[in-house]
Image (cartoon, rainbow, N blue to C red; front, side):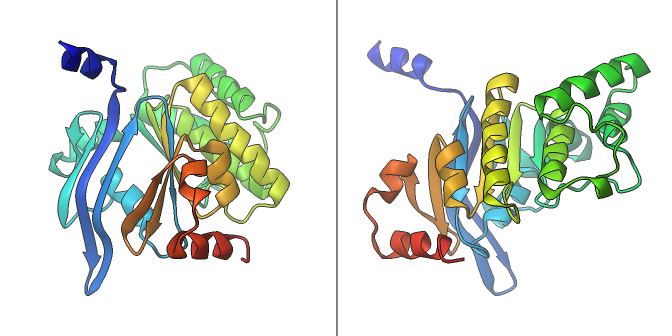
Length: 257
């Protein structure tokens, strides 16, 4: 009886990764990754460049196939899905690219409207415009609708990229290096936005980063990756309470780059 009650009160798992391996030729990139993402939480995957973070996120959305192991997203085994089912799953999982991946020839409004026109063809122009306006307000750029990407700052492009990901109301958000290349003040603004997105849109998120400040500000849990393995997991305070060799080297690396 106690076990049943404990199970019923446990958080829902929206991503479950077990024994995940991936290599490219002789290079072993992921070496036995295990990770759970629970509903309503932000998990930060923290590691220096080249440790396998971006490969992990691409496997989660089916852009790469694992060599071994399982990735279950919203109850679906990702590498077992056919094209139609995989496309349907991706509508529930928003992927915010490091580069923002905006269309240069489209205005901000057109960039945000594009996923709606492609995936919700029953929506009227008025409904699309209203949805675009709501998202622009949520990301703090309500007056940018007619601007081109070339007219935006790096931080604004990041916001619009997140907004375009949010436009389809995904259940899960995946952020790839959201603060890369930004100044400290803009990084702080992006961190606040990531937290605001979780609260307003009820998302569960994995944030890939090498930015310790980002990890501390947005992560409910932090998993530190080194050479394709997680070497420590917990809250930010738990992870960095005791700086053993690998953790200390990462900490020092982060603040000397």
